[in-house]
Amino acid sequence: MKGNKSGAVYLRGPSGNYWWVKLIEESGNLYLARGWPEFIKDHSIGLGHVLVFKFDGGHNV
Image 1: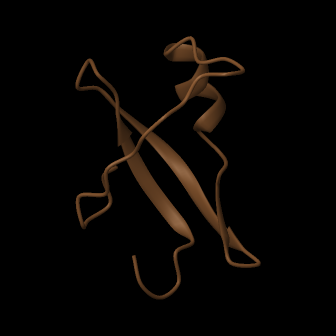
Image 2 (image 1 turned 90 degrees about the vertical axis):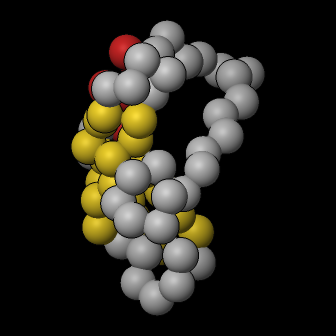
Image 3 (image 1 turned 120 degrees about the vertical axis):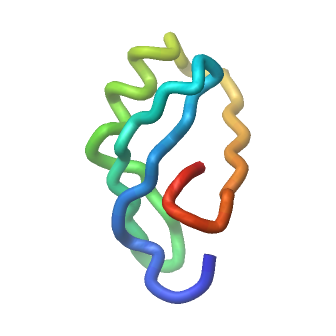
C-alpha cells in the first residue's frame, strides 16, 4: 500500500462476510477505527488473539 493509506477497507471474515472498517494513518502507523469494534465482536476476538491480514490490492483485506 503506497501513498496515503487513510480511507476505508472491507475486511472479509472466515464466513465470507464483509465488514466496512475505517483505516487511519497516523505518524507512519495504520489503525483500524470505525467498524473495527463490530468486526471484533462478531468474531469473538479477544486479548491474546493474533490476526493476520492479506491485502488484495483493492479495498478488501
